[in-house]
Length: 78
Image 1: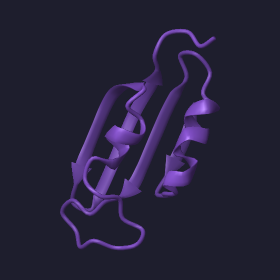
Image 2 (image 1 turned 90 degrees about the vertical axis):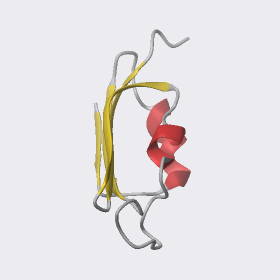
Image 3 (image 1 turned 180 degrees about the vertical axis):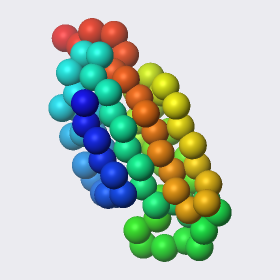
Image 4 (image 1 turned 120 degrees about the vertical axis):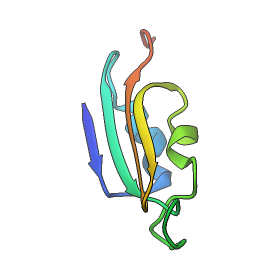
C-alpha cells in the first residue's frame, strides 16, 4: 500500500504506480481546484482520475478544495 496525503507532484505519479505490487492499494489525497480557488499546489478537476486511470478505482471524491482516490492495481503485472 502507498499512502500519499496532501502531497502533489504530478511528475511522480507514474513512479508511484510503478512501485505498487499486484493487488496493491494506493490511497492519495491532494488539494483541488474543485470548490476552491485555483493555485499552484491545487490539482485541476479530474487530475487523479486521469493520472491513475490504469488502476481500478475503488472510491474517489472531489470537492471543497480536496480530491482523493483509493485504487488497486488491476490484474497481474509481467
